[in-house]
Image 1 (cartoon, rainbow, N blue to C red):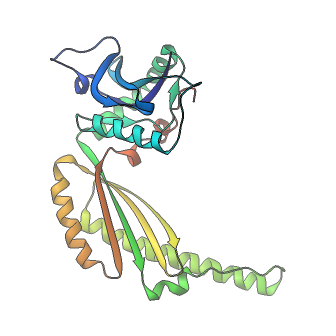
Image 2: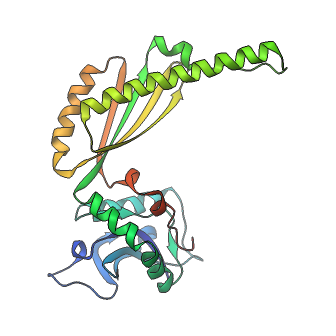
Image 3: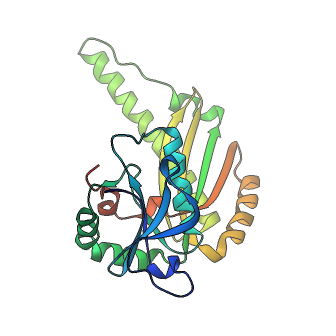
Length: 249
């Protein structure tokens, strides 16, 4: 039997009546991908949240992505989770257990580091006339020579200017929110806009304080549109090694 894996967690987060499961057991009230029942699969000091999966009859589409995320979110309400990448499938029980054994140390360290933590997601859209020149596309001429080199230098200058503006704003946002950790990405949108995508790791007990800071930041950051979501499982704060655990998918 193949297993579709959603996340890894600590067994005590999935116990019933104080009894730790030693064999796969049903987690009631949760539906997984393609409407499949969701199970707690104990493996050593961890538990993997899974569903039975048939590669021949099951599908992967946008609905499946939402089903995967919903299961992870439900488990996150009960304790620390390490989400598996969407589409992680283990073709045998041994493949699943081997993946846990191979990553045992990394899993343990990550669970310890992320216990009691949550991720907040902040999108900052900047629409500022002063950015128009820095954000404008800079086409390069088809021929080589002096004009090509001049345009290349100008393009590099604009890229640095854009990065500098994004870095300055992300530093300002960091000071306003003061998260434990952050991950920032930036991309140009439209002709005169820039989107800074920020993931903040915070203490789960500080969500209300963070939301209050968001209200304050929305007033202080001029020429910016802010969109906040969360708390989420810590998708952006897993070690790279864990992000590549994909079974036999």
